[in-house]
Image 1 (cartoon, rainbow over the protein chains, first blue to last red):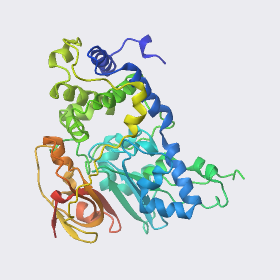
Image 2: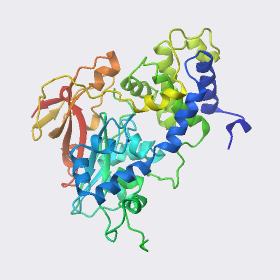
Image 3: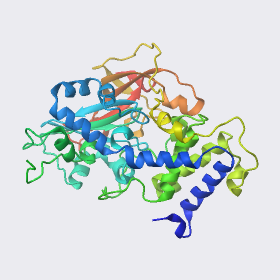
Image 4: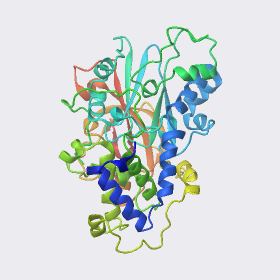
Length: 202
Length: 218
């Protein structure tokens, strides 16, 4: 879909005017903008985080390194850089569910999850997750039993959080690639749990 | 600042709606705005905390009505003018009055390195921590007119240091005067009931990343 085929309005028009101005002034190179966009559309995204989780599930030594020094363990995959400079991994267990939010803006671990989805940046999620995490999780179809503790992490500094979900039953013996396929973005934010597919692939 | 950006605990904002198979960008202009922000950041005229503070200064009604990338566009326009990369007149007319001097734009071969380079919010300075894990703390009940990373819902509250992240740039001063004021940043654990009262679950807690300057011993 090309924006050029339709008349631009509102922010689209303003963005275009600003880009033209900045190019004319020599402050930005439009080809570099294309390259930046391509990076975030094709090179980073939740598939990166899924590989981390799968490795942690499959390899106890990696899991240990990841929980002790997440930044270094994630860098083993080459997932470093902007908005992932200092990482913390939060381990879910049968008794603890972790949920990540940013109430003040929309901080999110770009190198491992890509750019944040609209709901994560929305007022309802930013406002409600700290005051009513159980309500938000119930609404998203991930009700938390009364005897399970909920820990909400508000990303107010330059630490970026990734949830290590519980490995679902029925995935014993799966390869890392197979495990990575079932790990979802929402589980790594903490608003969902990972489920094994009804019909095992093996 | 006590702005509408400080949303934690607000009521009446509606349901959280997850879009299935959401694209990275919903239209071409959103992608351009994202890239423009990064490419303009390359000139190092402002830091990330000044960037956040620009968006916080969008008037409340406009902030609430704007989408994420509309806020990023608005914040970028503010910073470009305030930091002298474009003039207010240029922004208004869309026409350059002069070429920017002494700057070179981010080029394609530099993009990968630019994105991977660390931005050094973590500092090497040897600053002793004021607290250690397990210490009880009381957060300041401050209402600065400028940028702060201490949300309103966590002011004047009692918590426990969960972990010490090390020495970091202090965002509150970095946004206002570029003073990095190196100090320890911690995850502070607050019982949900300390923040929200008896209706919250006795089991649950909220962790907030805060700096030495936000905390007193309790």
